[in-house]
Structures are given as C-alpha cells and as structure tokens.
Amino acid sequence: MQSSEILSHLAENQAVLTGHHFVYTSGKHGPAYIDMRRIGHQTDFLRQLGFEFSKRLSTYRPDIVVGPETLGRTLATHTAIELGDLPAIWCDIVDSESGEKKAVFSEKMNFQRLLPGKRILIVDDLLTTGQSLRLTAEAIREFDVEVILAGAVVRRTPDVIAADCTVPKLEVLADVEGFELFTEEECKVSGPCSRLVPVVLRPGHGWKWQESNPDYAGGFINLAV
Ligand SMILES: [Zn+2]
Image 1 (cartoon, rainbow, N blue to C red):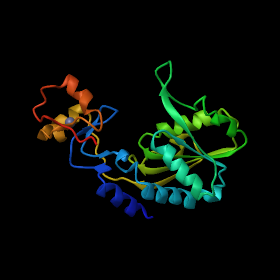
Image 2 (cartoon, rainbow, N blue to C red):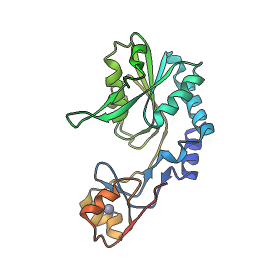
Image 3 (tube, rainbow, N blue to C red):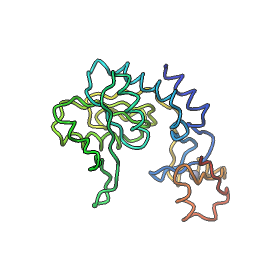
C-alpha cells in the first residue's frame, strides 16, 4: 500500500478532517485534524497497515511487537501476525504521580517478563510530537532489551524524527501535509478565528477553549463520532 493510498483511505473515511477550525492539545488552532478512531474498527485496513510495517521492518528481525493503547495495540497484533505470528503486547500511557505522562505495562498481564534480551518493535497510529513512542521506548528500555525500533502510520509534523522518539530507526508509512498551526493571537489575525469559522468542540480541545471563550462570535460545532 503506497503512502498516497493510505492518505486517500484516511481522507475518504474522514480520519483526516480539513477546512474546519480545531484547537489542539498544545492550545494552538488550525484547520485540519487527524481522527484515527474513524478507522479503528476496519480490520481489513488495519491488516494492510500491519503488512506494510512488516514489509518495511522485517529486515531488522524484531522478536516482539509492542503497541501503546489505543490503536497501537490493534496495530501491534496485525503487524506481529504479518511478521510470522510474533508475540504482540501493549502498554498504557497514563498520568504519573508527578503529573507527567508515562507508559506502563499492566501488572495483571505482566508482559514485561517477555522483554529482556529481545529486539522490540513499537508501532503506533499517529505521530505528532513523538511522545507516545518515546514514553513506550523509555518504559521498554528498563528491561534490558537489545534494540528498539518504531513505526507510525501517519506523521503530522515532518520534523519529528527517530531521535525524538529515542529510537535508532523510525518507519513512517505516510506524511500528512499542510498542517497549518496558529497561536491564539495569530489565529485572530490571520487564522480561522479571523474569519469567524465555528470552533470544533470535539474532536480536539475546542470544548476546553469554549470554557474561556464562551462568547466567540463564530460559534461552535461538534464533529465527534
Ligand atoms: Zn482560532
């Protein structure tokens, strides 16, 4: 599956939304949003993505595939099957006591017992800052593993590279172009705020922005599924 086919499929299924007015986790505004939940149930598409990861990463001979919740978990399973029925495990990204995010393996599953001495492949759906892959790599590195590779289906920010995820090898299946980001002030001058485009409450953090800007003249809409 070519990058262009992956991007077309995401666009056809509204997993890449454009021409709206979103507020991101960072607080910045912009016209586009990637909502991978829209394809999270599509086993055929996810299988093809798993096949793509296996094709591009099998030469690195991973032993285990790890996926951070949510969609990374399903992708890990599909990728592991394509790599020859390897073990597939997952971890959760949670808020630690200090308020920072961290990746943890569930005590109930005790998956970390499988990690020492192994070559690990981490796969995830969306790469924005590299945080999920980096946190997952950090959690895995505590278990004396041999090497950690990473794969992401789509990348929103082209300058995010393997080093940002603290891995030696990062394979991205498709880059989504044209993500314009505005600070709140910039948005009022030349972004969607300046044209009074309705702010999307969900997906994204528009609902939070609404709390401090309830009288925004462009109004609000909901695009959540
Ligand atoms: Zn705005």
